[in-house]
Length: 243
Ligand SMILES: [Zn+2]
Image (cartoon, rainbow, N blue to C red; front, side, top):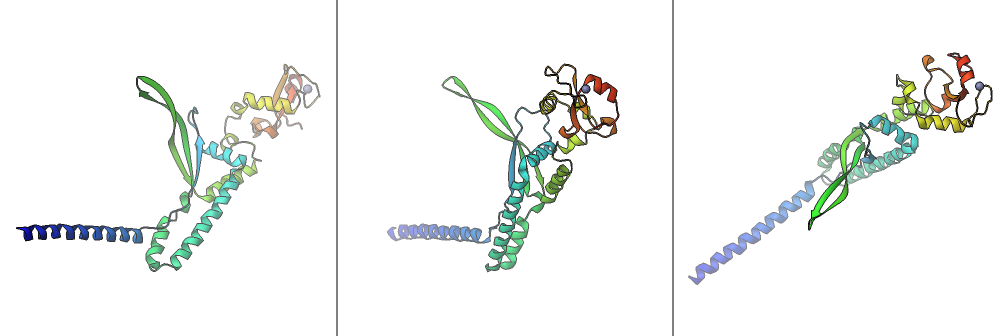
């Protein structure tokens, strides 16, 4: 009886040890065969809280206009560095072919630049009959681009002097883009003075914002194409181009 119990105990112990050994082997195999390559994505968040129908093209343009390309280019260097290090790692590996396949699967240049829309949302929790609010940031959309696309967009923005987003520039409705803020900006720049006759009208009454190249002739609602005119000069100008 005792011998039988002892042998049962032995069986249990041996199978336990066997189990542990198998687990360790599986873990080791997992560590050895799992991909060591993790692609370094560029990640940027746009806070679109309170914005209705935000457009990624506009936000991306604003990001580039405010100097975002430097971040993008710095990140390109990081990606290059990662590629070099990965290749060195493959060279030193005992499973070169296997590692190379894993590396190629990890490379994702077409989607290297990731942008998220994030909205701040208010949530509530209840504790001891007391309701309190807290904010959480929720990712609502994601957009992925390659470097060439961003570089092309930057070049297009450079061609229009970084004055506005590409969508605004190509908008069919240029008049709609003349916002109150833009009007104020031009008024201050031109010092409330008609740019043709030099009349100074600090109360703004009788001053108008004029498109130097008229919209009808392809002029854009951008700072460089706007100026202050008095209504008299503006009326006599009509659609002529006078500079
Ligand atoms: Zn005038």
